[in-house]
Image 1 (tube, one colour):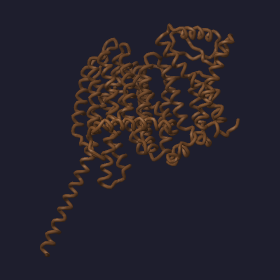
Image 2 (tube, rainbow, N blue to C red):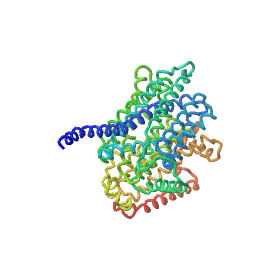
Image 3 (cartoon, rainbow, N blue to C red):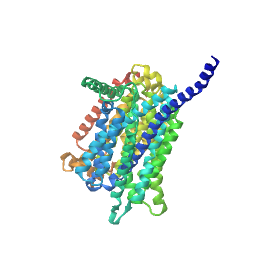
Image 4 (cartoon, helix red, strand yellow):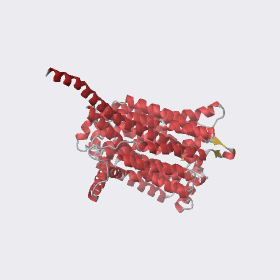
Length: 594
């Protein structure tokens, strides 16, 4: 017996060691998948990110590069609505692998850029991008949950660690990819650029390596085996569930308040890709300098993404971190709008690089904090909330790429700055302790007016709004802003009225650029000449050789008909605004007095 006990004692360490080996092997499998996924995305997106930065600069004929990107993001917006069902049907690993094919095809199309190659490649990439990102999120979350379950760790901590590794490596793609383009591209004679064929060939090789690397990912089995569903009924049920998950977040006050910030995040990215590289960097540094400036942008983006992620502790910290990033970007937009001009010498090189660094800081902060904010607020509907993130971001980017060829840089900068001011306002104008708390999740859609009783101080936000209003030369908006701190019932219709006019002005610019022969465009042009002669305040728009007076100045016209039409339109907008305010509960709950 003693001998048997001794043998058992000798065997126990071996059993424990074997279990330890098995556990460490399991640990290595989970972390290995994260390493593979992160490295593969870096190899793929260092190529795509750099190519996207150069798209509007290289393919300038008939604005093919800009329009191709616009088509891409329209496709991305549409397919984001159904991507969850596709990923659920295929499995996350297969979806990620299929998604890489779209990026490969887009880079290949740039070797022979024509409308017949770029448009189909852009359409398909929109589909591929939607499933690769949904697949990435699903796969990474599944790996983190498996790690937490196997080793009895806190799930949120593991998810944070895995996402931190992935996004930290992903954010560096701008730095690495643009350094490659900086090393290969050369400015030629008469504005031409040499080395593009070699550059896109190198990018194709990088993407091929990334795709091969993804083949080594383990299949994730989390609550079931990946693979196609067995019946069409389950797919139909999945589509129905997806539709609900997309629509339901729009009924949540918190999502409505976050959407302007989401839309702005897309606008500022599109501004960098479509305008900053073409109008600011290229004149100062040349096409070859785009890679260097965007490498600076990517480096600061990556550093600030990691830093902001570590500093995030809750809603309060997110608020102030986002505020810092928005402030830096506001400084850049004001600098470009009011002060910046092309200079020679060292400053001509330093200024674009400094702007790129500040824009990169803002982008890293906004994207990191948006993901954290959505993850904190929408624990019970994460898929639907992140679908809204991609839909609104992609739609904003698509709009910029489509209207970019038809409006001037000055107008683009003003529109982005106005979007920035409204994003800041929606983030701050509501009390954080009422709207963005866990208690709100358990309440049954409280009236928005009740949430507005204790309004957050608006002095800082009003300063930004005054600046944007002054820049856009809109006295009506400037007059309405002070009322927001006095009486919501009166101020909201006026602010919405002025916002409606701003939107109509932008729409008129686009229509006038497409079809200047239209009758109403000619009428506006004639009216603008009259305004110019009267010396009234006016805003320059992109109607060639003309200026357009603001709608507020319609009251100065001599005919009674024009004044009546203006008054009727104003009454209609105010009435609709008042109806919206009453519908969301603001009218009854507003107890402030003038």
